[in-house]
Image (cartoon, rainbow, N blue to C red; front, side, top):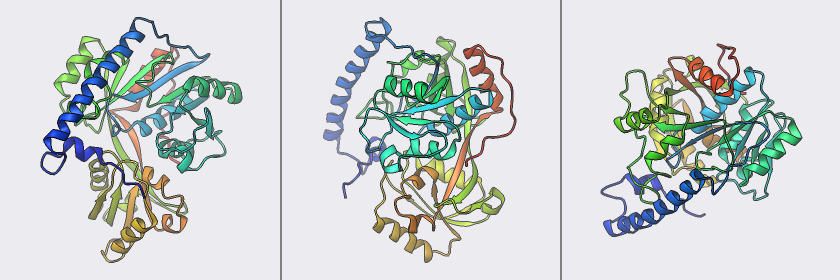
Length: 376
């Protein structure tokens, strides 16, 4: 089995990570990467490279760091908001980690799911399972995917997932997600750090959504200054637990049922500490917590070892993230023994703040639905 590179460790470990010479090489590569990104952005800014308008409205959700900001819960939240406003949305994603290389791949038509997680990628498959009557498509050329969604499903608004750097499509609303704890990671560009672009490119955003924050958290001075310079509004958000479902979705435990449970947890996501915090805030007692690299594809042996340790731990539940759960669907006999924590993104203090902003940008009147969208 091919070993996954743990980039989070490389970027942040000081003592047991890469030696200094290796880091210097990565830094040198990052300087070349910075030059390429600078030239590309200026070509778009001066309209030498032109954005293409699709015959419908487009909202982009993205970040300037490599993963870990919670884009998927945000896209799900926005899709439900737009659906409640009477729109017919579709989601376009590149399908990171998927193994389907066709120009357009339909993960779901909103009713039926056509591709498994191994072909669609974790996030598109999760969105397809969660959202009803909202098509999910993947492909490297989102212009082609967008036209397919419009022609086949009659959609009238597109949500582009992870598209802040994908400037080929004109977008009516450009949302940038930043981690409230570490908005710019370790401050270096790829591959020395997780920055995809220099922080100054915040200027292209219509709004910034800080994730994993709270009402009392001080916004990083660099974020405040960059946003204020361009009059860009900043929204705070938090990820909160909804419930936990079995890996095969045959049973569900409510938050009240989860409170006080002893759990063995594991996760293969970019920032596993965020999962640990959500478990603790839900009142669960964490007996053990195993960490794997982001998008880690578990082997049968790894899952059997995890389950063996759980059986001898005295814990009540073996639990992981719903995103990890999408990679367990290939091993149904193990998936049915594991619980998946489902979460949602909430704007602080009220989701209606973001809904009002989106409606204003789209030039429509907002109608509010105070019921939270729930996973299906």
